[in-house]
Amino acid sequence: MTLDRRAVVVCLLALNVACATARSAPTGEEPPRLLSWSRQLDVREAWLKKRHELLLPMMRQHGVGMWIIVNEEFHDDPLTQYVAPPRPYVGIRDVFVFIDAGEQGLKKYALPAYEEENLTRFFEVPPQTRVYTQVLGELDKQYRPATIALGIGGRRAVTHSLTRDAYTYLVEALGLEAEARFVSAAPLIEEYLDTRIPEELEHYRTLVALTERMVKRAFSPEVVKPGVTTVGDVRRWLYDELGRWGVGTWFQPDLRVQRKGMGYGSSRGFLAVAQEDVVIQRGDLLHVDFGISYMGLHSDWQKMAYVLREGEKDAPEGLKRALANTNALQDAMVKESRPGRLAGEVYEAVMAAMKEQGIVPQVYSHPLGNQGHALGASIDFRSANRKDEPKKLREGSYISIELNTRTPVTEWDGEEVYVMEEDPAYLTAEGWRFFVPRQEAYYLIP
Image (cartoon, rainbow, N blue to C red):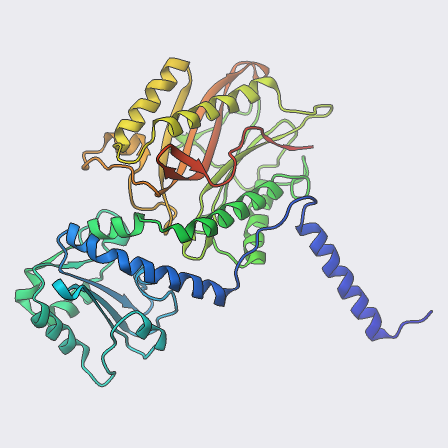
């Protein structure tokens, strides 16, 4: 039977789509369902309403009378998408103002360079005919806040994001007398960004499940061909997979390769990242550090894979023992962490538990949420040694349980092997809970 040319093209296109679908959907595994972009906006703006309801008690706790966030064209303030509808802002300068109005409660004003009707659902928006510098001055005179908190003076970039020109703009608008009341908004920003709301949890679980799915496929025969595939090939595949799903990332995917007799360097106290031209071979122990950005939330994920040698059906016992040591370190983190406990105390208790078990650990866990390296209490060797005020763990907070152990492996002639794991988790009254089950066996690449 003869087909016309159009029918042939249609058939070929259909075949290509079917093949692509088969490649992207491992059997027996239901892919995570992501929301459309417009639906993401709807959901995130529902979250914003609840977040605004949390603000007044936080402002009062931190002694903030007025909080001002300034967004500038080509220099978005990292807070904007979390204090205002997460839509594009292209004005030269957009200003968002939160005021403790006493018995009147929280007053919210948006001073946008361009009209945006969605802002009116969350803020009072003066007419575009008004001069906004005058509006700011009037708000200060009307409410007389004892303090005006700005993005200045904090240690992290999201807490000192106000530019010099924006600072000058506010001084000109409010006056030198008001400048004397300027304070750092850092403590308020930290609590605001470190406070998760229940509605976010399932969406974050979807994000983590997608992260896991991508890493499992990256560490599979679909991507890795021993003796052929390079570290750079895997990294590029992960980039392309991000694009295929329509999600972003907040850092470059990194891979590490450990191989018997290979020797490996260190970087800043950690096992060094492998060069892109390294060819993956049988018997290699692989590690990936990868994260996804979706709906204003970010994951951070590290997992290990073993490339089977000819005739092998599993990793050597020594490597499995090394992974079990890292699982024991994770267990200690879960056991010792409780809401209200100081992060430094948890760190010291975990290290003591590992010493008793004869395990050589390194712990560098950090908060997760609206940033990948988020604000809040870190449980790590750095924070334990800093002179900062000790931070307590908050119930409901998200964390990256990031850590490693070093274990001598008999099958590698006693060479030490790093097993580095990183799992997003959230804090309950009983300790940390993983969003998806942790890794207790290596991903195996035949």
